[in-house]
Length: 290
Image 1 (cartoon, helix red, strand yellow):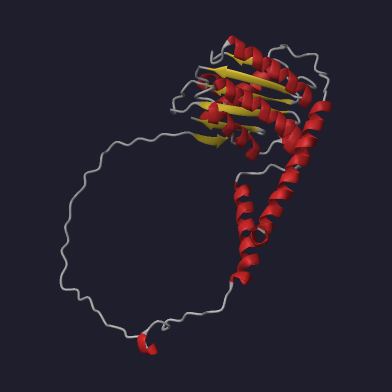
Image 2 (tube, helix red, strand yellow):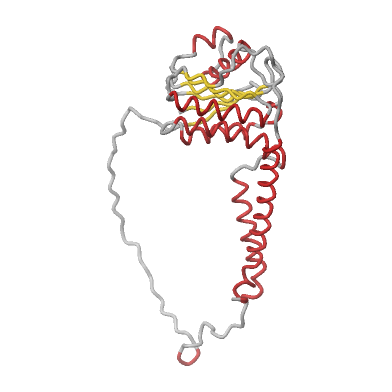
């Protein structure tokens, strides 16, 4: 057992250090969440509602549960957290406000106008917060768009990578379970504001692969010398007389036969899947399509 541990001890040490670090971060995050109690200072907001299910995606019970969760997370983050579902084309609406705006920014235009018109913001009108607009309508370009818009101080707190990450998590569930997707949006934002942004920078998924590769390299280098041994067998150890005999074999190319066949290609094609796209020059905004 000791010999086994000696070979793998660096892996165990690295895992132990990572485990301790994650535990400390989790405890710190939990402690901040318990003590965080922001007081709302925006007295000019025109609505107390946070879930606007215009697309009729959620049940009444699911809306109530999300409203209750959002109220809790708002006090912990000091930000308004808004969810809007739609089932209508935003092309005419968005291009009337911003002529020539691209399809993937329609939801961004809608989010900005909705935010300003309702005076949303935890600290002041058009202040701190986020809004997720999920439009279930398929636009002329064939895509369904979802946009995440950061407002106020959240713009500086969120990078493009973090915005894409939160949208990826929403898209993981939105088709099968919209309520779970929107709950994930609320909780991910809460964790980002009180967790990652407090203790460290955003960690992309590729970082986990890098850590694994580095750990493997360290293990190989550490054990390389111990695995070297004395050669006891040579190329002629079991050859009679101690001298190898090589037989020469040749392959002669005589002729070749080539068969050709024309394959007709269909003139029509198809494509599918979901993709993501940024919001161009719109600060603190990102959108995905499906």
